[in-house]
Amino acid sequence: CNSVSEIARPSRFSGRQIDVIPSHILLMKEEKELHQLAFSKVVLIQKLEAVKDNYEIVLIDTPPSMNLYAEIALIAAEYLIIPSDLKPFANEGLENVKGFVKGVDGFRKFINNKPPLKILGVLPSKISTNDRFVKSTLPKRLAQIPQRYHLDVMHSVIFESEDLAKCTEQTVLTGDMEIPDPRSVLDFNPRSKSAEEFRKLATEVLQQVGLS
Image (cartoon, rainbow, N blue to C red; front, side):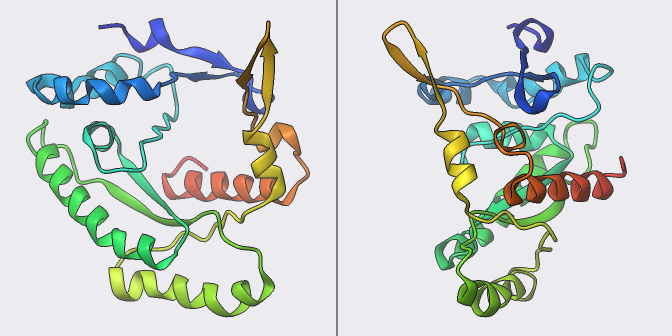
């Protein structure tokens, strides 16, 4: 099993070098086999522990489902951000997320008495910019999160935008093949409203984890 140092690759995102460990959709086929390996849930902890002096922050992007890979990530993590478009079905799913986290916390206790995950909050994402929605509907949906689901809502909001759509649709030609080549919005349009929203999010996260 490879180490983080062996498989991490430098990314050109945001003009600054960050290391990235890419995933692939084909890994979903390996989930059943990994479930049968007793140690699979703690491997990521061991891998990150080995390189803890190399990184100040590690971001783990989990699948949009409560599967084994999400569980492995949450077992290894210290903090959790819950992105949500705040639509009714997404809000109803927050109860399932809370139950999932509770189960993960139960497992964490058996790993050197690892403390419970700290939920930084629900992050409003892919939010409509419709003026009427923003002024009337959005405040009601934001208020519903702490009132009904007892979860904090982050101050940052990521709105839908053309820039975000375009930067994820970037491609590059390799021979006769057009392959995905997504870019950070901070590179694609650093002066855009979306870029500023992500800067504010980064600042908020750093403040919450005590690194600002």
